[in-house]
Structures are given as C-alpha cells and as structure tokens.
Length: 252
Image (cartoon, rainbow, N blue to C red; front, side, top):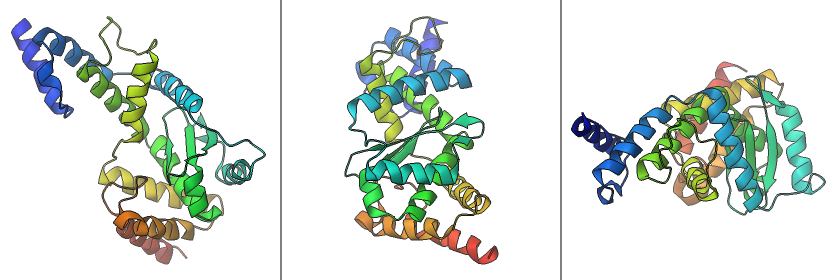
C-alpha cells in the first residue's frame, strides 16, 4: 500500500507540473501528494477562507490608493456601475499603486486593480476588464484556481500535511507562495471566453457600453505583442476583441 501511495504521489507531482519533485523523499512526496489531492475537495468556505488570508496579506504588502484619491474615486464609480455583489458574494474593490497594467480577483470577491491599468484605460474600458474579473468569480474559475494553487504548493512541499484538508493556519511564507501561484494563474481558453462573455452580459444588463471591452482588448493587444500580463492566455487579445465586436453587432 505504501508503494502504491508513493506512486500516486509521484503521479500528482507530474500532474501539477512541478519542477522540484525529484528533490523530495518518497515519504514527503506521498504526504504532499495526498494533501494536493485533498485540496481539490476544499469546500467553498475553505476556499474563501484561504482567499481572505491571501488577499489580506497582499494588501499589507501593497501601497493602496486612498478612497479620496483620483484612483479611489474612479474605481468607486466603476464599482457602483458594476455592482457590489457577484453571484451572492460581496465584492471588495481596491486600487494598488503599481505601474503594471494588471487586475485580478479571488473567490472571496477580492478585486484589485493596478494604477498602471487605470492610467492606460478609460472608465468604460475598465468596466469591461473588471467585469471580466468578476466573471471569473461568478463562474467558479477563481475557486478552481485557488484549489490548483493550493495543490501546487502542497505537492511542492511548501504546505506540510497536518492531518487537515484545509489551510486555516497558513504561515506568511505559505500565503506568499499561494499568492504567487494565483496572480500568475493561467485560465483556459474556454474560461477566458466565458469571462469575456460574462462581462459583455453584465455591462449590457447594467446599461453600460460593451464597446469598452473591445477597445480595452485592442489596447492590451498592442502591449508586448499582445502578451500583456493581464490577458496573456489563449485566445489572444485581438481574437477576443473580435468575439465581443461580433456580439455587439448581433445585439445592437
């Protein structure tokens, strides 16, 4: 049985594409691999609890724009336009003073927009981008990303097996490891298209112009040959802009 479990752990290391598994002992791989497998059974409450810890630590390490700053006022208006709950989850919006054109969301409704993105885009374009991030939350993509990040950290040995399947007492270094995995998470082509379409529908339902999705994608397509950190996964920004343009034409 121990031999079989060791093989299972080895398989899990390969499944999450870890480069450092060969440095771990068989017992460590077995323990970490089992925890990685268990992480995919994390409940919604567990995922949100881990997201709360992760987002809180990231906020503590970032410089956050004040509510009365020009960034804070802009994002507050965009939040009012899009709504403050998504799929029953309260949304918490903040601006990081960071020149990178980026934005992300977590399963607990934590939405962070970087000032570099706000400098690049109009309010309507930001509505499209933030709507896209809200789509990842509403459609369960961020939940899956959290499970994958936790499994990756567990299989790497960054999270030790404690007999529990939840990460209720993560250390700062463990949370930092999860944060890195989450911010660099790559969604599938299907997930990205679903989030794009969610944003289009949300903007339409809220009486907002979906054109911002198109022009926002077009701007991102011009950044680094279409490989901006925000929308770097397939399909490319230009193709995604065309998808939204087609939807606008079908739904004038």
